[in-house]
Amino acid sequence: MDVIQIVLLALVTFIFAIDQFSLTEILYRPMVACPIIGLVLGDLNTGLVVGGTYELMMVGNMPVGGAQPPNAVLGGVVAMVFAVKSGMTIDAALGASIIFAVFGQYVVTTVFAFMSGLMSKADKAAAEANPAGITQVTVISMALMGGLFALLAVVAYVGGEAARDALNTINDNASWIMGGLAAAGGMMRFVGFAILMKIMLSNDLWGFFLAGFAMANIVQNIEALAPATLLLLAFIGVAIAMFDFGINMNIKNRVGSGQGGASDGI
Image (cartoon, rainbow, N blue to C red; front, side, top):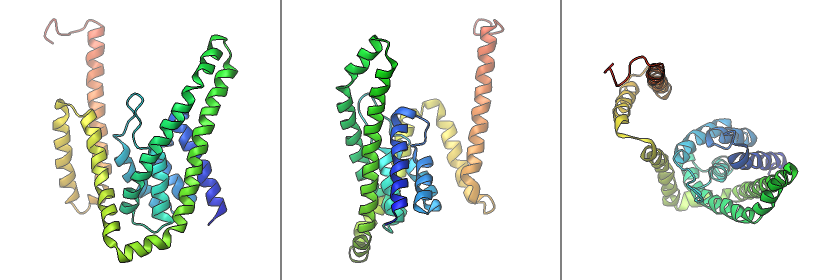
């Protein structure tokens, strides 16, 4: 085990944990966090692949009220450790990481429950116009959340190293277990995106969805363009979004200035 890797992994996990609820700089999202963890573990390529795939799995998981979804930070850390240090395939590592992401969900809920008892101190500090008191409660919250996640990341690293031989034995003697995890991991990316579509997709957007689906199939079957399918579709999506934004802003400006509108049918 590399002590420097363990320290760096604990440090970046601490930052990701507090970013998720306090800093909100999007550092904790898998597409950013996993490549950084890949650099720490010495495998940037796996970090990019896991990050992009895990982002699709988590993109539709959003907290609603006090309910917490499976945690993206802890799941991403475990997926990277399993993929890089335990020798698991990426799909199998992603499938196994869901268990730990759900555990991270309970860790967050526990921290929130504990911090609810300190909110009276923050309320009192606010009533007394005492910024230092509010800062103290915030720092305690961040230290607790970040410390727990950093500890769990270290445990995952040590456990991943220790489980390498056992996982290889399972893969050799009970390949159906790893096959099942790989199938689950491969399926979850589509489930995650389906959850996002269920939240965001409205009836007037089905045309864009079907057009994008058709374009993806067309471009993928053109050998020269196939490697850049996602990038080309992203450009098309940005162009449509810019066009739609321009039209809506133009209508808004005209209505606001009294030029045209529903009253004259223009």
